Length: 272
Ligand SMILES: [Mg+2]
Image (tube, rainbow, N blue to C red; front, side, top):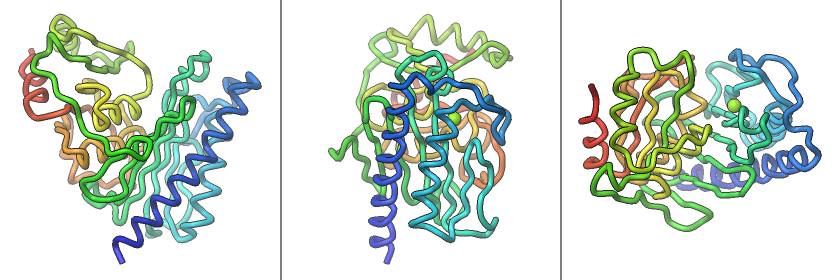
């Protein structure tokens, strides 16, 4: 039964990411992606690409999982609070990139049989410009574009390629730690799509992703963190116990996701 359900989730993910990529490409080529609309359910400015990709994804979810509880960034909650599975959607992670016509943003979808992190059954993060798909629908297995994905390794921070995310106003008390990291990491990178950059750790593309300020929402990161976990990577949530979070509720996260425990510990050792 479980195997069948997960197979179905993979089919659903592939179909909804196909739809997301089609809509995103049309809007990018027509130059309409960055047209501002209104504010989404969770307060961020909504661009046309956010809304149209979301509509395309939700249509596929409703078709295949009619009893689901959908919680999506722009539309908010759709369905019964006790619906199953829980489907968390960030239609476009990296909307600011999209609004500046920078071609790096992703869609992130997480399907949960329950409402805890351990209940995540399938998740995908897809670069909807270039088409790279990082997906897990079976325990302990992650794929990139259908091929098995594994975290990389780096022996030291002065050889490491690490993605970070920070914006003005969020640095708070983490400024000294951030400076300490920037002094030690050989290749710090700030791409502006937290879900994709976290999934890069699962896929062996980067050695780590660091989110010092607790401001990633559940739909931004939970699927990507599941990918890191299932790929055998290392996760340290800095502001809460990830396993105790109710994924139906608003929550914000700070975390380090690393290719292995050694890299994770190296990063944590820079804390000042
Ligand atoms: Mg978004």
